[in-house]
Image (cartoon, rainbow, N blue to C red):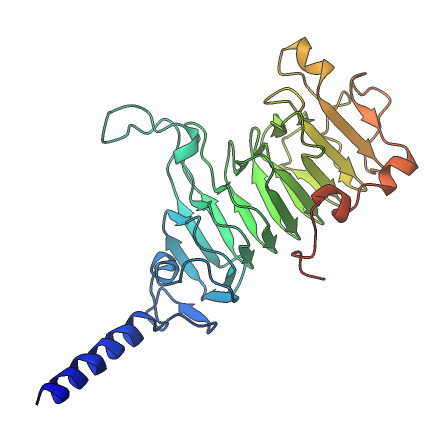
Length: 325
């Protein structure tokens, strides 16, 4: 009898272990708001993923609007969140910097306003929209990144001020075929980020980038083969201004609309920034690409310098984590 009882306990233990590990495999998880998937919310699918996975896990999100404030935590790796349809698979939230926080009554501040915060590394987002649809009442982040080796392919990032925050120096981000819109400083932060074949849409007369590249970091933002577009009423947009000294931003082989200001860059009303800002251009075309009136503290790269701007050189350690076309 004792042996039988022990066998039952062991069997139950294995059953519980098996149940606990139901999703501990590389199978795809399906999310659908209409209830036709395993999960109705993206957060629920993220929650069942095992920490520090050594396999590639896909969360496939069917079309729909998902009002969720999401965090992909630091212990999750090798996750891909793939939407069914970029324009119709939307993650949205509406926090902004001036919302009063319930715990202390103080404004929320910029860095808590994200719709999606990615703390983990080795994360991929495909064919999906990340939106902060707050009214223009303050900074409102759609995407907040902290992890390394993050890839964004055919995604949309919608917002107003501070749409995309690349939040940690030394981390590497790759955007390909993405659409990013905003009003002021809507791509900002200290990370090294490469934007390939992206469309940048300016909603008002303001600033596109606000890099805060650390002094010891060779590269900040690189825009290659991108298209700078704007709302019809927009006529005066700066390529960038330095949020911190040593800000690095390069636009190359890109197309500028006529709304880009002749001087190109702004010093954030601080002449000291002109001594350290690393603002460069190369081989751009379009009505706003004329460089004759650019600020004297920006640079036009030589052909030889431009040849050295490659994914391998920019990302240094490696670029083998970037998927091929």
